[in-house]
Length: 229
Ligand SMILES: C[S@@+](CC[C@H](N)C(=O)[O-])C[C@H]1O[C@@H](n2cnc3c(N)ncnc32)[C@H](O)[C@@H]1O
Image (tube, rainbow, N blue to C red):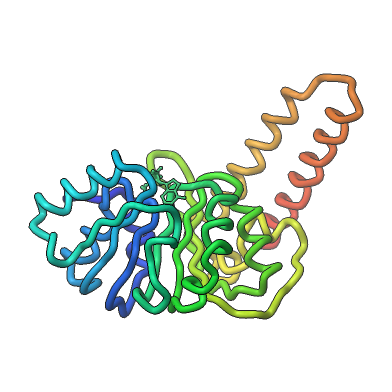
């Protein structure tokens, strides 16, 4: 079984893993990859919807991994007990939903060595939440899969709230610190995208003007950041 570049980047952030849970597993590709390659001894594949969970059960069964990967139906971290697993992956969902999943079962999140998050929308909102709550960002990764950028954030519970300039909720400081090989392309992509959105805003309302100004300001900050790399 081949996994995508995005899922492989997520899996590569899992280390020393005795047990993990994949929240919103859908196809269960991550737990299957980890267990099959002896990167993790046992896993729990969870999904809130029956259809995806059936898909996960089927894939686990055809790989002959039923004794090592358990499939559980339920929302967020509700299906996991504190201290039951070392780590969790919450990938392919919006940043707001990932935030809510963590906060709903803080007892479970606190018991983890780490959690790997891959928001598909609003990564900036999730990053701000992480810093506001004082969780520790252990590492960050970027992946470029089929011409799309994905941001992956590895965190653990801590209690040292920080406030950053807004631009660092958009571009993770860890990515800057490690001068990630995709960072310049990622920032350039964001600049082009914001410029494109600006070019579509032609209304004469104060809301539209405000939005345009906000985006132009983001472009300036991103350009400044790009010059410093
Ligand atoms: C787009 S898929 C992502 C699948 C996989 N994690 C990935 O990254 O490729 C999102 C999955 O999350 C599930 N899901 C949505 N909300 C959830 C929640 N609150 N708890 C658990 N699973 C959820 C959906 O049923 C769906 O299977």
